[in-house]
Image: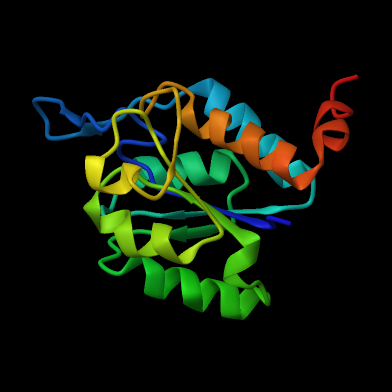
Length: 163
C-alpha cells in the first residue's frame, strides 16, 4: 500500500511556466483540482511531500495551504532526500508513489513503487513510468492520486469524505 506521495512542482503541480513581474516577483499557477485531491489524501491519514529543484516562497505558501508537512526546495538529488525522509518516517520505497516530469526526477522515479509522469513529461521518463493523460498543471496530480487510491483499494474511504 502506498503511504507517501512525493510531488514535483514545476511541470507537475504547475504547468512549468514561470512568470516574473516587472518588480521581479515570481508567479506560478496551481490547479485547484490537484489541491483538492492532495488535501483529501492527507485527510485519509496519508503523507504528502514536495521535493523540488527550485526555491520559491510561492511553493512554501502552497504547501502550507495543502497541509503538506514535508517540503524540500533547492534539491539537487531528489532520491537522496526521499530516502532520508522515508527513513525518518519508517516508510519503505515500496510504500511510495512519486510524480516528476524531467530528468532531475529520473533517479527518484526509478526508486519508488509507483512512478508517474504527466503527458508532457520527458520522453526519457515515459519508458518506465505510468504516463498520465493530463499535462503538468492540468490536474495531472489529481489523476495520479486517484490511480494510487484505486490501487490501494481505498476508493470507498476517499469517496466517503463527501458522501
